[in-house]
Length: 138
Image 1 (tube, rainbow, N blue to C red):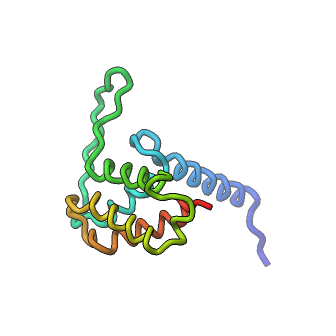
Image 2 (tube, rainbow, N blue to C red):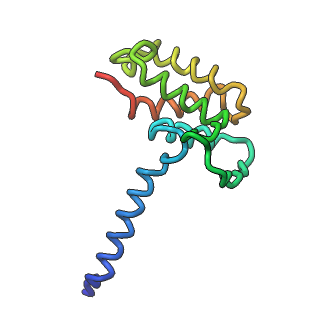
């Protein structure tokens, strides 16, 4: 049996480590926290047509200002706040079907004007699935 060349194994490991770091830092510069960035990615997948992303403006923003957020980024931040809040998503929300139903309705209201495919049912369910994993509270 042929063993993997140690140099090739090291290079493959380094490549994988770099990919993990890049993924962990993907939200940097977006104006979104990591969970809101993930929600944004979920919402983007439901765009009716491929979104053409303009190159970022090379002009620096004065006083450290962030570029204006898109409507989908704003919705992602609002959904993040919805699930992160103990007021709207109290402890054990993930175990209460009525609470989850209410949160899906709030997500639906936040995204209804974004022209996303599946905004009425599929997107809120996908967001809920993500939220149960990443926002569950004991």
